[in-house]
Image (cartoon, rainbow, N blue to C red; front, side, top):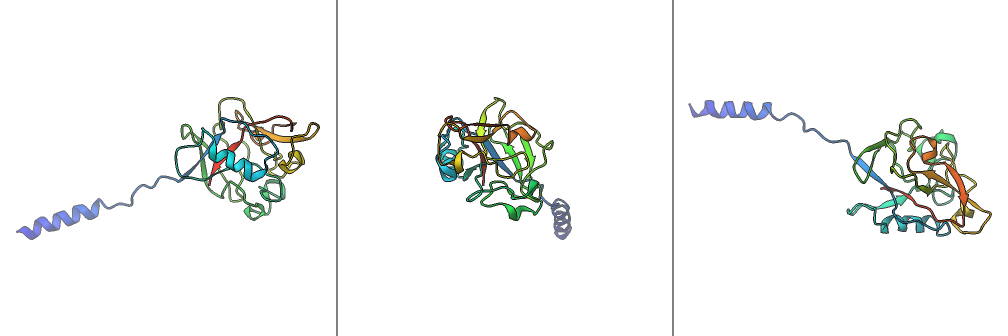
Length: 190
């Protein structure tokens, strides 16, 4: 009767081979500990994200959520009415779930156009009310306030900033601050 034992074992093993539970992939976001001058350009901001002390200790690439229209853009029309193809080297990806790097708290899931609707952000990116450069309007288009395409720090020019303690549109477009200042960055895992 050894074959009966094999049959039972086979039946038990096939009964326990239900599909594995797969966690929804998540990408991390953090606010830099350091501040960045507004004249270093998009690639300089990305480098600041990669070298910041708040960057998770992993091998992932992080880019700054910042736009100027030529090398990086989220949307050319409000809320990316034409879809994700409007983006140029955009840091958010369609249908990706994003979490706060420090504690994995859920932030948002980007929609099919690689942006999110305000009111869907679960938690702020940081509890402290820190300003960070974005160059964005509340509709995800490029703000004319971008310190002359992030190329100068002259007084009288302004750069759009977000607020790290917000979950509404001010998380990406809170104020236009003078380009003589230095502010944080919001960095997104790629």
